[in-house]
Image (cartoon, rainbow, N blue to C red; front, side):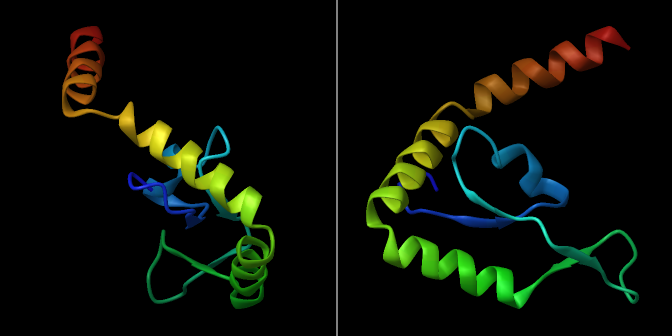
Length: 91
């Protein structure tokens, strides 16, 4: 994402904070994994559709790549540390 590569992310766990502002394609069909409570698995058909979408619509792929790079450019260690400090200070 940081390099402007259009990205496909599962809409669960740590990816949720990266799926905004058009920065990635979200895989929303997430199925529970019986052997791994709390984890989810993406639907292969949805993955293939997302890959085909990016392959066939190059302009959209470029837009998603640019939005991903812009989003990650704003996620610096300094900003993260400030946010953690802000949250902890409220406790």
